[in-house]
Amino acid sequence: MRCPSCRAVPFEPRASRALARLLADTTAPCVQCGARVATASRLAHGKNDCAARSGAAAVCPNAACAFAAAAAAAADGAPPMLDHLLRAHTDDVLRATAALYRARRLDALAASNRLVDADPCRPRLNAKGGLARLGSSGRFYCGAPLPTNCRCCDGFCGPDSGHNCPECHDLDVVVKRLPNAFILNADGFACRVDPRAGNNLYYCGRKISRASSDYCSCDSARQCRACQFTSNEPILRRQNILNNDGDDREDYEVDGREDDDFDDYEDYDDDDDDNDHEVEDDDDDDDDDGDVD
View 1 (cartoon, rainbow, N blue to C red):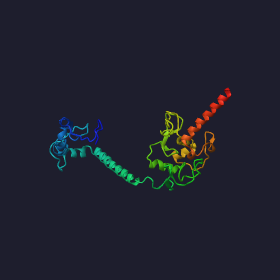
View 2 (cartoon, rainbow, N blue to C red):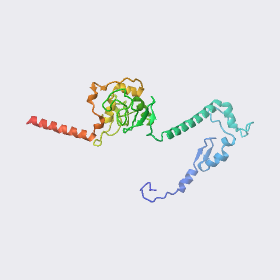
View 3 (cartoon, rainbow, N blue to C red):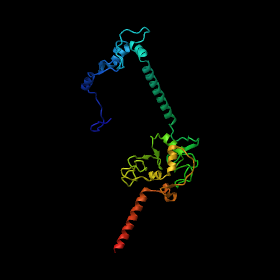
View 4 (tube, rainbow, N blue to C red):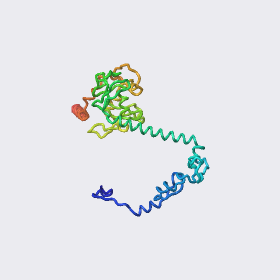
């Protein structure tokens, strides 16, 4: 263990007796009966002296009720406070009991889902009953025909990369537990439309490239290549993904640009693209110099 101040090792923590005495003398109200109890005797108070647990005098937890239980037990042997709650606040007791057992059921269901999803790479069935397998892009693919055509794939869902069908995309969202309004971009990272931008473009928050210090966000007004492909998908197909309706195939055409205007994402390299821009700028400078001469 390291010292929290200087990070020296070995470090052996020691209890502060002065602080322990100070905390032991601190009092706090008991959550059951309302009596102020010292911290050091809180455990013993809960077992032996608490009025709510021992059946002694206690105040009803309902602020609108002025009932104060007597020390004597009820006729059926139940504590006075419990007998009062069952008789005067039956609806409150039933609601509290239902909420308690509902929370326990949800906890059990969450634990069951964690056990089921222990292997996130296993094949799964999408909404249409197709067997979807995980591809190299981290997205699920079932091999069914896509509702749209684009250059990143051959018109089918998978099997390794590219866009997937709306049913498999819904499966991606469920397995990755994405929040509302989030989808996966072409690289399989979560992205969404930033409401501050007002341009219906997707941003994932990652760095644009290894050679760039800008991030994919509306603040920098730049997108990574994967979010560019996601934003340039046909509007009809994005509506199919979010609404899961429609099966008609549509050509890849966005803002007047057809699919030939977009190169395959797999052939793109961030560093090479940056270098190409630099070379083009140098050529332009040479042309300008030639014009001056």
